[in-house]
Image 1 (cartoon, rainbow, N blue to C red):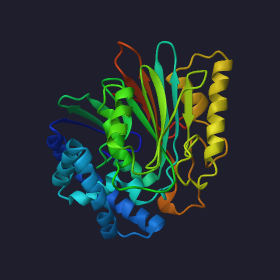
Image 2: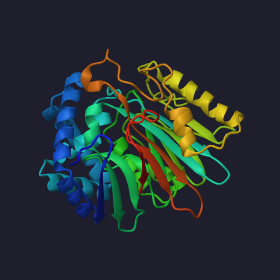
Image 3: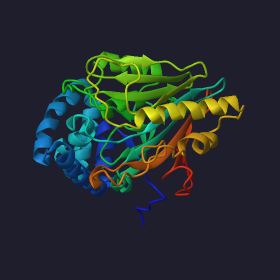
Image 4: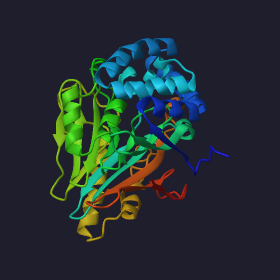
Length: 359
């Protein structure tokens, strides 16, 4: 019986935003409650905030989400009803990055790569191991919007994945100030992207909505290639692929200088340089760049562990915030071809789990 560390839970949702939310809440009520327990402990550890205070802060974001993205707000309200929780509990999960003022230490390394006939979009997602039992591969059939296939945390409406229009998203957390509760939380912004029919339209929608409440990097791609979105409440910078069609990113801004970003993860610049070197070596060797090659040659790399591309737990960190790679996803987009992803549910190259196909 689930949970199984090597076999993720899969659920399918469909209908109106409220119907999608209700079923999400009903099917994942247990996991959502566990998420609240985990983040309650993390907020106390990182920000000295108890859950009632977190909910008070979340109310500011609740107003913003309802004003700017009413369909997404209806889905969040449905999750709360389905799980028999207060809506502020679900809003708090969806703006946990903003409430903590960037004090969570989730790492993550992402890469987008455009070739003549395809685009690959990939990421190692690093976070505390206690979250893994509450991750889910979620498929959503929506009215008048693309179908979505993503890996997300129970209760969170936008994360890492792609849609039926071949628009995909990856996320790198950034620790920087300020935050602005009158703007969109990053997980809501990810859902805006996944609701879009092209990367260009997703970017235009984020611009129209006023960008993000916190500093974050969203690596977005479609069959035309990747774009790095270094987003913040103070201003945005878009990164273009290099001469090889590639964008690599870790957990610091490369070009965005609009925010106050003190150094926090010392391994982030090292990981970025390492990713670029390993990817360039693939090009120099003339090796065909496949999803398997990315996992084997880049995303399984443990150079500079524990803060490596394939992240290892750091025993020197407090237990609630120790990160390690929980899954590796590689998406593939090509014109006139159905988008797909391969997922390793665990550390790539470690033998932790078989390759899972999404959808």
